[in-house]
Amino acid sequence: MPEERYVFTASRLTRGNFWFPVRIEINQERVSRVKPRLVGANEESIPISKVASVNITTGLIWSDIRIDSSGGSNPILSHGHRKADARRIRDLIENFQKGR
Image (cartoon, rainbow, N blue to C red):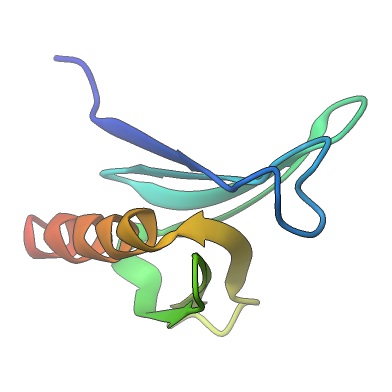
């Protein structure tokens, strides 16, 4: 059975995302923030079961997302996502947590 995987890419029009935009990837097991680089990528992840809260700060067009962990690790921070994508990220995380 194929695994459900959702990918949300930040806008290239926001700071720090022009050349290599950040991606938030969500599946039933984890939430990951992937920041591509010229060679390789930097990836942070939090297991779905360890997500404590999702904070969305909306601006005129773009939203900032902060995903906090209950394990005490650093939060996942990302900016430059569309408002609808930010809300969808929050809803997916909540739905995957309910399904466990």
